Structure formats: structure tokens, C-alpha cells
Length: 317
Ligand code: ASP
Image (tube, rainbow, N blue to C red; front, side, top):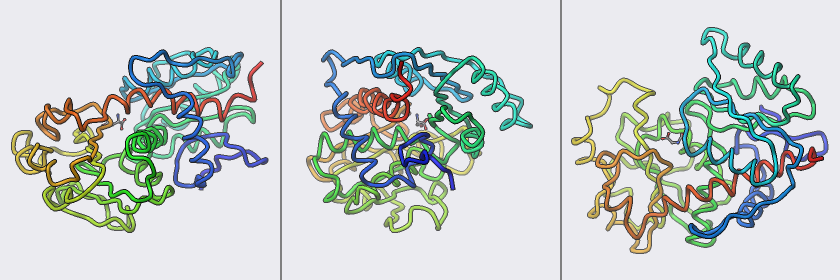
């Protein structure tokens, strides 16, 4: 099991949400709400990370996550450095560690890492110096904890308590770290029902998503739900022959106005982005009144401010 806490019980790393307690999630969400602002309002700033140095190490592409971690750190007064890392794939864990040890010698305090290989984050977190924190910005298909938190925050802002809600996670669940982190946080927050809705080839293994009813058609899976979380088809993670191509996929599994009408009239629609418009979601839904996709993006900065502050404000000078 990944050890994410210090000896005094405080949160030091954030690699998975799976082992967090409800009170830890609640306090991260409360702090995130403190930093959250509606689109168009001036974002808050502070000095709680003054003197802290953060490295963003991304070995997979990212726009929103990298930029929002960067803004989050800067808005709290930290120094943030973005590093392009080219690692030898044969010994990735080791070569990531070499990079980390070099940066530790330059007195970096926090490493924000995105990597396509399962296990690299846990490996790094078990080798860094005592004062250093490691945060996941997305690990393979396994985990994307800050996305899970920003999704929970967005749902709360629009729907209030998560407990009475029926939430459908829809699409390429098999390859999605967003779906896994959403499942973990929503389960800890005791959502009434988490449905998983996917074509057979994109369903997760039977031992995953324990307790979630499974649906192979959107028509049935979306019936009466309060929240629809759409996912991108992660083409980079499998051979495309396993599922129908774009137009065909949209006809069978895309979120269209007729399918959305199966959900509750006040249901919200989410998507972590990047979106394949016209493949998993119709453009007029993505931009329509039930979409909260842009609030997810702005909440990303608020959540990352809360996480950075929680793990690193004690280092501030
Ligand atoms: N941006 C999200 C991720 O990094 C979702 C996606 O790429 O589809 O997992």
C-alpha cells in the first residue's frame, strides 16, 4: 500500500484517493471551495507557499492539469518550474529517480508528476527526502486524484450533497484514470448510486468498480440520473479495432439530446477534457445549459491550490 501520510498523520503525498478518509476529503474540498471563484471573478491569491519550490514533471501530454498546477502554485506564492522529461523507457522508474535526485539537490520541495507507467509515482514517493512531497497529475489508467477532487467539488457546487445522487460514469471506463478516481472519491462521499455505462469492450474488469451497476446502453444507463460524467475514448491505450469508429460510436454510445432526456431534467453533464465532439458527446450538449465542463476547469486550480497548501504550507519561509 502507498504511504501518503507523515508520522503525525498529516497528508504528505497525493497519489491515490483510495486510502483517504472522508474527513480528509471533506477538508480538501472545503479548502478548495474557499479558493474557488466563478468564471469571470478575480481568483484569490496568497503567500502560504512562499519559499516553496515546485517542479512539474510531465512525461505525457497535458494542458489543463499542467497549467492549473502551475497557476495554483504561483497564486500561493511558490516558485514553479516546468520540466520536459525524456526518460529511457526501459528503466523508467530509475531514470525518473535520477531526475528527482538531481532536482532535490537543487532544493525542490514538491514534485508534481504525470506518467504513463503504473507504479512510478509510488516508487518515487518512497525514495524522496523526508521533507519532499510527491503529487500525482495522472498515473497511467490508474489514478488522477486532483481530477477526482475537482469533479466532486463541481458536483457539490451544482447539486449540493453527493449522498442522494445517482451518478453515471459513461464511456471508456476501462482505460480511464478519471473514472477510477471519481469512483473512489464518490464512494468515500457515499454517493447513493454510481453506475458505469460502457460498450462491452470498454467495461473495466469484473473485480473493479465494486458495487456499481453496469449498463451496456446509454438509454438504460442514463435513466433518472442526476449527474452524467462523460469520458474521452483513450485511443492511445488500446488497438482501435476493439470499438466502432467515430461516427458509428456516436450513433451507438454518443451523448445526444435524446439520450440526455433520459436523465433527470436538472441533470448536469461533465467531461474531463479533451473532448471528442461528435464522437462521445454532441457539441450542443458540451456547450449547452446542462454542461458544467467549464466549471470543472476552473475548479481544477482551486483544488490544486488546496492540495499544494495542504502538503507544503509548513515548508513556507
Ligand atoms: N485529461 C484527462 C486525463 O489526463 C482525461 C483524458 O485525457 O481523457 O486523464
